[in-house]
Length: 607
Image (cartoon, rainbow, N blue to C red; front, side):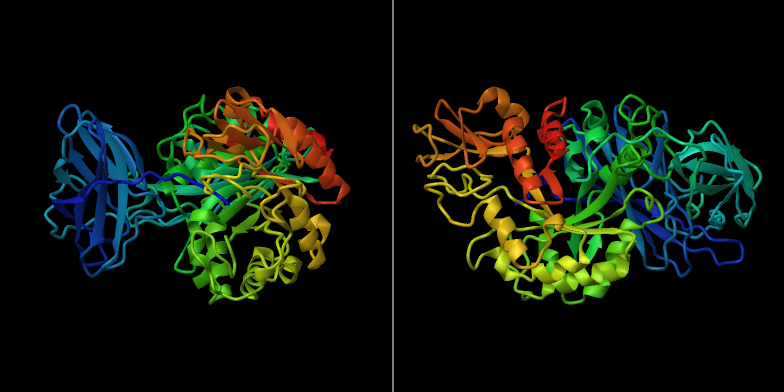
């Protein structure tokens, strides 16, 4: 079971026609027209969320747009997404990004921002003209330059060359981007980048600017590895050590990619699953674009120690993961789609697996972040069974989806899946062809946790992640050993099975019995959700008082919790090695301590 917390807006949308937005067209085209509509989508008293929607109401394509407006004193934009927003005093300007400036007739695009204060926009302008929806001639953004080619590669430098971009009024210069960050602006079509590290991988793209300082789309990327030997990566053994990084953790949990560095965890893992992409209408889609691609990081918040620039093509978690991979080249990153909340779209995906796989490849290999991801992970909860919703795709659906993903991604990408750990007779493992699908996948993340919890409010109290069965277990087959045994019996190689570890506990309140099997009155209080709490909190608030079936439990006051500790993780890792498993994975990084003691236990236990 996967969980996520997503705040509901809870506010009615107020549509305010602020002004018309005039489209931009080249001199060779008839001028087109467009409108802009403003909506205040959330209001929390001291601040608000605003959204502009730009619609092309003309008959010719718009190639770029700029919206300007004035806020009253005391109202300002604090963060923005899907546009570059700047200001001079109370005057604000929003320009399209490289990927959303083109609008076909009838098409629309939205960008949003968080603001402070309570004022509304006024005085809308487009390129200094009126915003009445009329027609004016405009200026096209430049085209994308050609994909750079690399030459003269040394230990510390590389020469880049590219074919020129075109523009109706002329190209002024080019921004050279290394790993998504601008490192130079040049007037010609070549640049030698210096000061690099030997034996290191880099990714370069180029972006043109015209005489009006409009930026066009980013070119294709060229990957370069400098010569010379670099330091050996930290020893990780031959086992997979994978952690989930949650997209939404950058909000309330205040957990960022840099925390993997400061905790020491980055040196002790081999893989990261980025969770989650959504599955809508049978297709893979980006979920929270602001967190993934646009959130700006200051120098002290970023992995590289360099602040994000306002005009760089990629920011957010994806850019931070790019910086992490540059610092720790041994880490591979997979984009995970689905999860407990977003698995409802897999049934429709199963109706056309090839189309689904194609949509996933388009998201994972989007040119803006193609170098970030090394593969894809599918977290379907659950094929031909019930999770948040019930699926009736049939036992072959999961195998067919896995086959289509492998066919689309090919042999050079990792293709994996998080799957049920229900080892009971006739349970969820028996509902789908996991044995047949294994030939197409690199490994399974077997979710050997959440077997028992306070959704059964009265109990009995039992550990949510038992390694083995035990006397009094409420349901046979609800343990790690049973799940692994059943999957192996279905033909899944042990080396393709990863044991799951939860970096959290599940608990009840109203409990008087210290040993497992007691009665309760409901879920114990938790920081984000009743009945669940991070290990980093529980280790101090309710220390373990015993162990059962290879995992820990704790009774403090009237609360009863179960969770894994460094000691029980050590036991589980020894068991995984003895079984010949491919390694272990965990949900998720932010539940660990600031010094990463659970990651350390996994790393040490698998060596």
